[in-house]
Structures are given as structure tokens and as C-alpha cells.
Length: 306
Image (cartoon, rainbow, N blue to C red; front, side, top):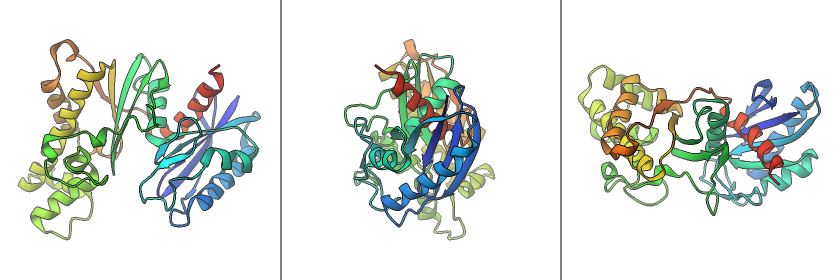
């Protein structure tokens, strides 16, 4: 059977027809109308579904959605969200999309969806217990055991970016708190720290900071190394706590510089207790399709659950 997987982001919404083995048979995408509210976003998703349905080789049996925000695991509603999509919190995504499309729908967080894809067919496919960290504009994560996601009581499990970090002491976080991992190691945090020291307006994105670090810029090197140390310390603590079979690191920052990833992995091992210190830390193997693949696989898992 085929399913449609959806990945709703703040700037783009992607969709695909996903086969049972996780392969994507057809794709479509559109800009997310993030300033127009939940109804407009659901309208774009509906249009993408209607565009893909005739392209499926078999009847489509359902829709799996990976979305930004905290998703209620029982209702598929958006419990909480940042301002990336206006008025997204409170959107009854599963109910509204199912009504519009006439198909069963399941909804989960987009990073959670990515983790399911990596655990099922990606870097964690041969492991029972997979931990994923996604490094980008924010820092998210998930734990998948035997192919099934642990959402926690409220659906908020995996907010690894809001772990306290000694490297972030005193730094404000996007959640309103201070001293969290995301405040020192997310993409915007790395850029902000560099610009605060150098006051250089020509540096407009995080990639430029990594490029300057690679060229020997002292400030960029300190900022990047600090971020890597914070992430490594967090990974080590998480491995000590959850004892996964593998840690998969994904997201745009994960591929910023191979030596930076090595720095993260080395730091993680310095904080692991000896009994878990052999836990592999690896980069994700799936590309940008991972959230929509994981959303479709999650739908299938949910349908199979008694």
C-alpha cells in the first residue's frame, strides 16, 4: 500500500508518495503560507495531496504528517509552536486535514518523523534503540525503540535543545529561559555570538562563521568550538541516561564541517561513563525526504497498533 507523507516547515511544505519500503515514488512542494495562519497552511497541504493522488500506482491509504511544533500524540493537534507559523498552536491539524482530504491522518513532530525514518531505513536501521539529535535553526531530537517513537506524556519528548548547558550559562534561549543548549549551539546562536564579538555586518549566516573558522579566524574558531563542546557534552549525558544503541546526528549544522563533527564525537566520549562509551555516534544517511518518509512510516505503524 502507498501513503502520502507531508513535511510542514516554516518556509516550505513538502509531500511525497511513499511506498511500503520507504522509497519516495513522487514528490511535490510549495511555499508554506506561514504568515496566513493554520487554515492557509492546511489548504496548501490539501492541494499537494490532491496533486499527488493521481500519481500513486496504488490507492493511497492514508496521510502521515510531520510538522513543526509540539504535537498532541492523542489528537494530532498542535499543542505549542514558535512564531515560525502564525497561530499554528491550537490548530486541529489531524481532524481538519482528514476532513478535507477524506483520508485517515496521523500527525507528529517533524524531528520525531525524521528519527523514525533514520531508525527504520537509515543510519539506525540495524539498531534496536536509536537516539537522534537534529542540529539547525533549533536543536531537537527523539528516541525510537523497536521502530516506535517515545513521545512522552505531552508529546514534547526530545527537546534536547533545552537541556541546561554549562557552555550557555547566562545566554538567553528562544524558549524564554537561559543557559540552554540551543542558546549556544544552534545555527542562529553561533551567528549571534560571532557578530556580538566582531560587530561584522558582512557575516550574514552561520555557514560564513564556519568558513571563517576553517580559515583560522580566532573568534569564529572559539565560537564554533564552544558550540561543538556543548553538543558533545549533551550527547554524552544523554547516552549515560538512555543507553541507546546508536546516536544519529542530523540537520544542516551536522554537515557544516567534518572536523567539527569529530570534535562533537570526541567531546561526547569524554563525558560518557565507561560502560556506554562504545556507543556509535554517526551522521544521518537520509536526505531531505527523511521527515516525510518518517511521517508516512509512522502512519503505517499507528495503523498496525491494536
